[in-house]
Length: 472
Image (cartoon, rainbow, N blue to C red; front, side):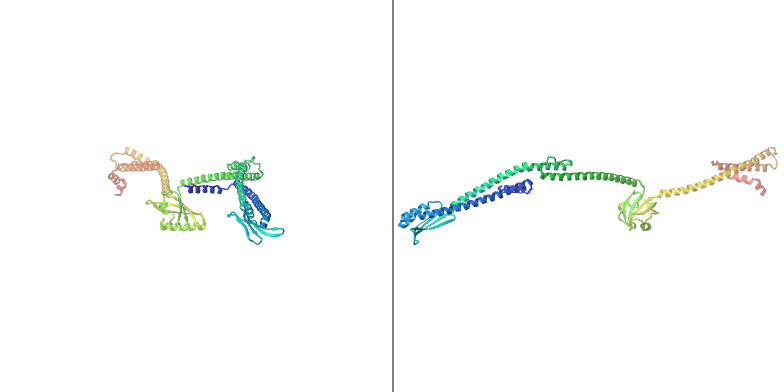
């Protein structure tokens, strides 16, 4: 658990210091600068104090050596070992003296005592002892640097404590000062930037009075003005583009509606005869679109029609002129006629607009038939007009042929031999009158009256006619 907590704390510290902050970097720079300055100052104090203590110790060593040489003159002259020992022990009581070694003139040790065995560093002094300019002995003093080291250690600890306290004070002070004198202006600048980012391009940054930040604020205002101008231009461009897109959509909708309303079928083919696109109704198609798109004409249409399509395609691509031709296909087992208008839309692509002209063909046939009927009717009308004129003229002539035989028969005796001839004339006149009546019926476009006749009666009447009798 402790290890996990330590790792978590380490990660938090890494994330904290990984996030760069201007105030943090300035605070750290200021702290490092002050620590460097204070460290150099304290190092100088430490070095100076160390040299001072060293000089003091050397001065003490010289004083102790001089005093020892003075107090040992009489005991050495008198060879008073007891007094020499007391003097040596008394000097050894000093905190700085670690060893006292007293010798006579011949170098014989008269007294030697070593104090602390763990002395840290040594400083020695040797002095010759004379009496009336006569050498009577030597004295060696060894001084310990432990006291100096202790003083220096205390001084070092004090300096470190001062550095730590200074670090804390400087950090707190720098944080407060940066918060007061830097964080606040930066927050004001950040607030202005946020206002500009939200679209308030007219924000003036009036709350910023620092020379260092006014340049930044001025540049931001210039950028905001540029952004505002670009945004207005972009909005105008977007508006124009939206209008253009709306017009394009309306045009496409009209074109689509027009294409959907047209009964024509539109095919897009390449030079090799492959179907690329299709638009139109499917009721007049030879095959469904999904079966012929991407395929070649030769695989879809009959051979003769495919050959015709290839020839017209090459001609359209070569001449860049509209090609119009007709053809027929069996659609749902019914012969259907089509008209194809083919035009090149690129160097390798043509557009073919195909229309079902079966009804037009049928209408043309019906028109020809009706025209023929009209011509016949006009002929019949002319014949009827002629027949009407002739009938009226014949009626005038036949009126005598019918009426005069009747008058003659009224005065003719019953046994007259002319009676049969006159009756034949009368009957022939009546038949002629009936024929004239039929001609008038034809002239008036009337309907002739149909009646049942006896063929034997017609033949008998014919055989009894005067013409047949005369021939006999």
